[in-house]
Length: 454
Image 1: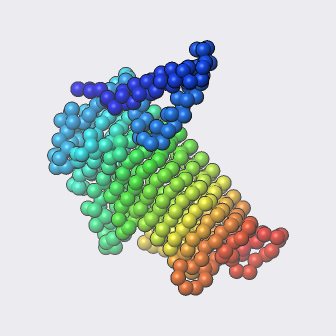
Image 2: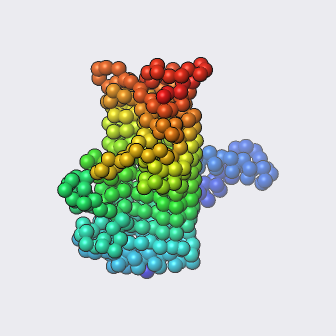
Image 3: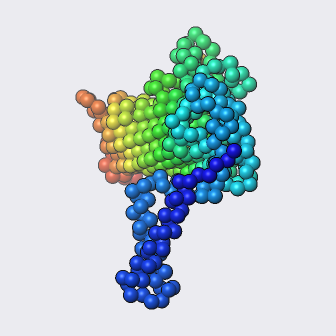
């Protein structure tokens, strides 16, 4: 049932031919008689030609490691791809054989088709490196009764190392039926879980790129207990009024890089939660949504730790928050070494915000003395406009003030008429360069450029 993937083979042949042409060309034009020297020059020519080629055809090398891989297409296992028939069994059969392959394998979802499926767990460990090539559309069943055993996941990839997930296709959570019955939409209803569209759980050496993920029942894509992850060129979308539809969710994950992703949802574009370290995000476009958030942390009096988080290069438009850190009262732990820089905002309600009094529940949260500590947070080169009067808000804990906060080269004005303001409570802030707006002058001025806001 396996078929060969010919496109990568043609690319591989092209590379070999290009090297041979480079070698013979340099011998003829450089007057080099020594084979070793001519091969060295040829390799230099060859790498330059490859750079030019890949810049013109950036997707050509996506599957170069699949030259000898077997392709396991869901169509070969009985999938109809008409958007009506249940293709779950075909997906499971194709995955079982692909994951069992002793050589590199490709689990293929062909383009120009729409595959309706129920919950699926793509479980490892697989015997060889594997690619999940989603070129078509995977569509979630709208039948909520099919989620009785597990109401928190739809597609779940578990313990699959050395995985490449790509293909230019669509993962569609068909979430409308879930949004309508959410307690955030219908206040009379009890709150209940809804599935995350795509969960990557305990995966190492993972690459996810060139996909559209949309209309999730709840979160769009979640990285949970993963290590060494590269994420790029994702388009993540859901309606602005869809509840809890976080775009990219990261929890208990180390060494993850996000680049060149466009996200617009009904909740956080990116949410980073406890146990996550060394998170790098660049080239992020966000809006609509709730912005880029660290947290929430410390809910239900829990202990939470995040560190070494950098967002370098982002554009946010019309979001309810810009860059936010949010923690519940009563929690413990630490959020430290966090950097937000080179960020542009337009008509953002709360451009810069630390909220240590976060409360997302029907009943008011009781005041508690313990809190997740927030330390060493830098905001640098952030510009744009705020739709709210308060462009900067540091609402920190009295018992555990925010420490090591740096505002450097900040220029945020009020959208329309009026002047943007800053409100800082229980925060120790250092100002560098030009900073606008600044907090009111009820401060203890300890040294030039330093203020403790109380």
